[in-house]
Amino acid sequence: MSLKLESKAIKAAVSQLSFRTRAFINGRYVDSSSGKTYDSVNPATGKPLARIAACEAADVNLAVKAARKAFESGVWAKRPPAERKHVLLHFADLIEQNLDELALLDCLDAGKPVTDCLTMDLPDSVHCFRWHAEAIDKEYSQLAPTGPDHVAMIVREPLGVIGAILPWNFPFQMAAWKLGPILATGNSVVVKPASQTSLSVLRLAEIAAEAGIPDGVLNVVSGSGSVIGTALCKHPDVDAVAFTGSTEVGRQLLQYSAESNLKRIVLELGGKNPQVVFEDAGDIDYIAGQALSCAFWNMGENCSAGSRLIVHRKLKARLLARMIELSKEWVVGNPLDPATKVGPLIEESHMKKVLDYIATGKREGGDVVLGGNRTLLKTGGYFVEPTIFDRVKPAMTIAREEIFGPVLAMLTFNTEEEAIAMANDTSYGLAASIYTENLTRAHRVARAIRAGTVSVNCFSEGDSTTPFGGFKQSGFFGRDKSIFAHYQYCELKTIWMQLA
Ligand code: NAP
Image (cartoon, rainbow, N blue to C red; front, side, top):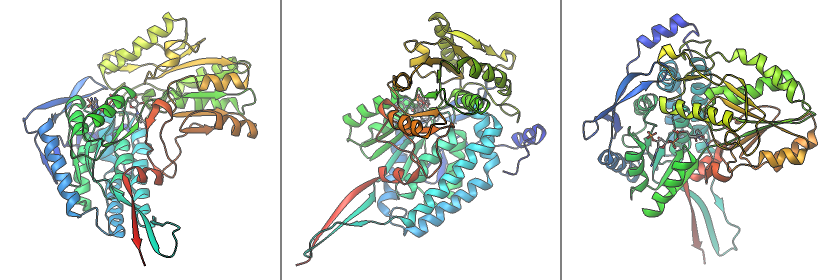
């Protein structure tokens, strides 16, 4: 990052931005075949930001054709691993060189605070590409333990053409989490970013070409999920779809696969994640800070948001009081302002959905002890105050459904068994945090919670070395990050050889 975290410098950099608004197919930008476009709206102002190509099934066909041709030619899939590694490392270097621009695109398009884009999303994405690139020439195949008359090799081969369907909450970072392992394992890909947030991924495609990723290997189609997402998922020549998004849409993708060619479907879905604070937890100031980050970071538009704070009855009052004091740090404002920690929600309809949940929480008996309202109306943006509900009961809607906004529900417990039961009382299983100074309890509870990532005494999604994905209805056959992500984009082949 070379951009100073200072309003004047950021404003100047924004005025220099230009947008890539067309689909990227077979190594070049193209209009949608129908010529149609749609508005991408800046959620901080409610005003249009750019007009983006509205692709349709015909464009998906072209992109899949280009991806298939590139795959079959072997120009990427059969390239020696060390060479693929060098190209991907160069790609990561170029992303880093363009980090400020990509961060600003995500900030404008998704309303994400600029400081987060510059210091978290983009650096993490660069690191992600480097990690997967470095892994390419360090993976070995296996020999099975046969007798002397046979040699049996177990090798991994790329799947072929993969569709990657992305959400809007981490536009660039989710692309990196998918593309890192998909490209590292030699596949070709057709990416569909969320229609609200296509700008950084459309720019990424150009950087990939500059880095030397061959034409057709990485294609981007922009437009609506119900049109091009569906076309990609039903396409008979797509071998797999990697999806991050809602559980509802994930469920449909499994149907599309069953109705088409039984393509592999890899799903990263929603969450209703618990943060559990035991009576023997450590520093309450620290925990209050972590609990707020876990609930309000990225406006709560985060699959791993800890939207249920499950606290031992003895600690509740003290923790809540400290959280309310510290909540002043969660400044709501223009996402381009480096001091802003809470930007707008992604779009008007989503804001209304979040406000409806707040109304339901009140109606069902929850006490709003912080926030609870839309704010900064004059901006035209979709801002909602960070909100805490006290006196929430496990059966209430706000304790059960993924709100995907800055809304935290506080529940209390008396015993460890009760806490574990509450934590697991959800159809989701993506992430959890637990706070305790007792090491034995930490191990015991971490094992007992049914979630893909359990953080002890912190809020974390791990790093590039650790798999990320969900139990239960938070995922299906999917893990982003780490070497485990490589395996899901490969087929396992046995080569059995007779020697005598
Ligand atoms: P979404 O509504 O499910 O959309 C995700 C993507 O699917 C978008 O690109 C969308 O396109 C596309 N889509 C919509 N309908 C489709 C269909 N019928 N066929 C194929 N594709 C379709 O989710 P979102 O609102 O963008 O993202 C929020 C959700 O993602 C939350 O539930 C969150 O928990 C989850 N998430 C999970 C993880 C994880 O790692 N587990 C990470 C981040 C987010 P359009 O929107 O352009 O129409």
